[in-house]
Amino acid sequence: MKTADLLAAAISLPVEERVRVIDSLLKSLNPPETDIDEEWALVAKRRLEELRVGDAVAVPGDEVFRNISNRFSA
Image (tube, rainbow, N blue to C red):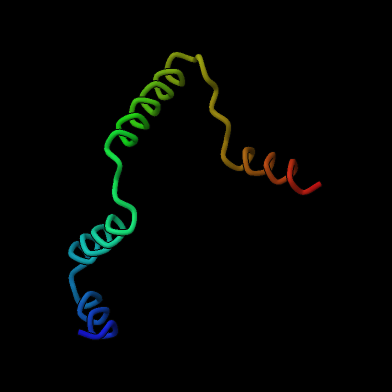
């Protein structure tokens, strides 16, 4: 099957099926690493709890990117 034919067939699928195809293709390029994913999940849970109890302060994204831009534009 030619790539163009494969793409045409994929595009004709319902949205949910296209999402499954895309997810499968992306995973084939970058397979999930379960151990690392579990570690990141623990870090995310810990950080969320820090935010909830007030041990950490959230910084708006636009402020973060502005600071980064200012730091590296010099």
